[in-house]
Length: 252
Image 1 (cartoon, one colour):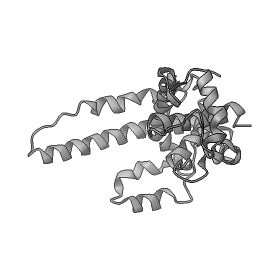
Image 2 (cartoon, one colour):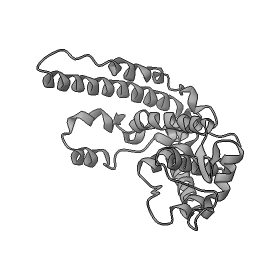
Image 3 (cartoon, one colour):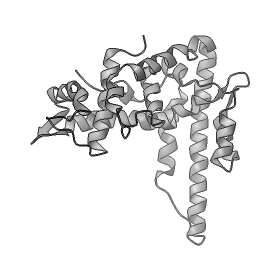
Image 4 (tube, one colour):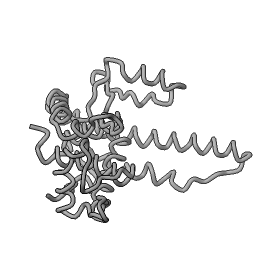
């Protein structure tokens, strides 16, 4: 089993913290009919001091905000680092992202990367690095707005098993490291990390050129140019993971 009961609770609570911290949604101690199913999760967060009650409203504590920040650090890395492995041609050893800057429109890029020859290896990479593949799929669901909290009935979806069962099926059917082989995995992961830093350098170069053109030819220095791509250089080691991936999101 890839999605444990603890995973389900962790992921659901991340969605709730996002609603409270970022979207300023109000949950009260006397919950409305639609929110009533969320009460056990809110009480658990309250009991472990991730939430507090101000008047009748649940609010995130510093501890809750810290837990959410750890998740967001992972999510930011997922969108940069792990997305590189979402479209890989194993037969040719080619990453779709190696051609990213060759396309002028999003439509052309999307048509290219969704070609059948590319496989999604994000779960294989997660397993190779001893990360939880269910969390990787959970993050992809967030990116795809599967957890649409503006939709009627989202609360029921969050506490039912339908979404978690779908994540379980995706993890079970995904390509695994043993399907590829250790040596090939190491090489592929290292190539992906190198490709990411090359893409970030090219992105920074293009941004600087645009800034320079807009400033009348004056030299423009962007302080974060070097910082962003050097951050990912440790990932040249196929076994490396940032330390914040190794801590539990919540302590229940």
